[in-house]
Image (tube, rainbow, N blue to C red):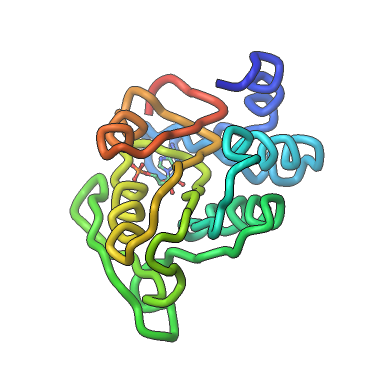
Amino acid sequence: MTSPAVENDLRAAIRTIPDYPKPGILFRDITTLLGNARAFRRAVDELVQPWAGSKIDKVAGIEARGFILGGAVAHQVSAGFVPIRKKGKLPHQTVRMAYLLEYGTDEMEMHVDAVQKGDRVILVDDLIATGGTAEGAVKLLRQVGAEVLAACFIIDLPELGGAEKLRKLDVPVRTLVSFEGH
Ligand code: AMP
């Protein structure tokens, strides 16, 4: 857990857009946090704070907001960065994993040589909801032999159960701010 002061600071930097992209959804917009130098730095520092003293080989970020945060985190912990992308975007040989969306499935990919067997990897994205996306990413990383040290997100929507789902897969989860509802 983060301290209440840090959580309040970060919460205040996140903008909520009602009914986007469709009616009933409260979209948690982190562009306001990214645009706030102090909040952005704080979020990046806090995301990996429990693993700051550990050996981290790679930080994997999920397209697209996970790239912004994951790149900054990778720099911070002196690790390499690995993009996990929607299918068909990466130019070299890839491994692919199907994952669950609210309606239906999609597929994500990473380069087959982006991670070496035994690499210690931290997964980063902006938000965990149902956990379908992050679960797919964990499976993809494990498929190529990575050790997933943790999955880190700025925002948790606990009612949707994603963080719990990852913990059941033996992945430690760190989130900085929780919001009620969807
Ligand atoms: P899930 O696979 O259900 O955990 O969804 C996580 C992905 O969907 C993340 O990459 C988020 O960026 C995005 N997402 C889901 N719900 C929201 C929301 N309420 N506000 C902003 N992004 C969301």
